Image 1 (tube, rainbow, N blue to C red):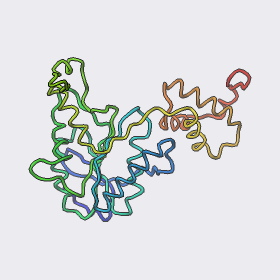
Image 2: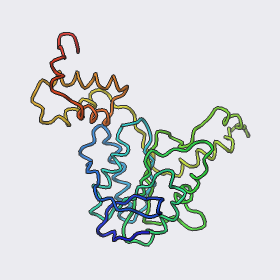
Image 3: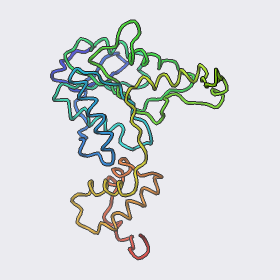
Image 4: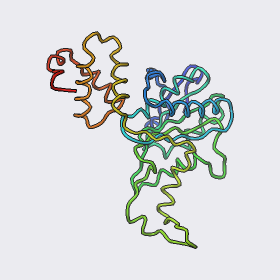
Length: 265
């Protein structure tokens, strides 16, 4: 399954067809210094990863919340920060989690520490292959390997959708509310992530700070640049690092001529 040496390969992606790990040769170079407005998240995930690399107790991590707020970028930046210290990363698509146990078996005896990265993790109500993830998170008869952690991102806190009818099965026992079995099962999956970091849309000052970081060499009128960036965010319906990068990618200096400082704040 791994026809390569992890000494020379820092990251790989699982390909279900033909059922093997493929080395990633062009790694996204995002760095921790590129991420703004999530300093507390960076600190907590760094501490968890450093404990993991030191062979101490560390938690699987779930980064959940609003789209485009840096969840995936943070995991990739953490990997880039520590890969020279022996950290390796394997990206596994949600639909391939049914093969997660096989993937983990192939690396459990390696001398490196592995982050299994699951991006945009969520499940439909009728799906059941998320149980393969549960077994790797906490083990079954066999303990989970000490050299593997799961770092996942999701827009959902509980990963599986909650419906009103699920709560109808709740019951009261001795004054305490006990959720129904379906709710318990959905909550149980997220509870297996010992570290949960929540992400929210960024405030305008942070967003403009991202713009200034991207346009570090900009020599024009920054007030007009900020107005254009705010217009773009309004059109996109959110402010985030992703939106800031999208504005940077499509920026045209000619657009500054359309900005009037007399009519916009």
